[in-house]
Image 1: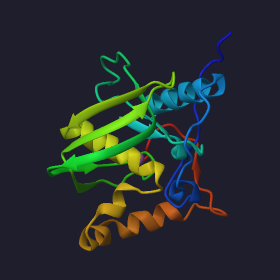
Image 2: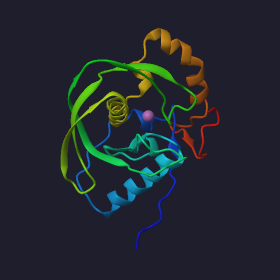
Image 3: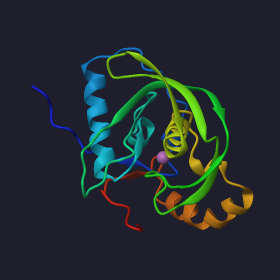
Length: 189
Ligand code: NI
């Protein structure tokens, strides 16, 4: 029988887990299915458009996205991407980004506007796709997580200065390289 999905605690800024380069998935088994189920469940409960495995403390190159879902008329259509690879990018787009792991911090990030990428789905089947605009932004943001990169790393030094105090505030709750948050909603949102 299928286990009920778990709400996983979120690793927030100041946690070493967020800075790790994650390991590729090699086995597509029930355990992976179960984890992806939990990851997706957690993304919806936290109101994210994407969530990467390091954000819930798992060392695997996996993330899930759903650009359309909202509480109001929510028909979930999650896309799970495993071992993704962005092999081409062009153009430029600026978008205000935030991150479940950096609660209360928002900043405009400049990224390529069009990407070509591949990934494996939950059944181990490889897909090649192209994304533009917001979808391209979200995939790049989540893909960054797999390499230990956060959206705040892309900011100019001036923008970084503006959020410095908030980051320090978040970092305060870190203990021995761990900074977990169990509450569901961003208290500052
Ligand atoms: Ni994020």
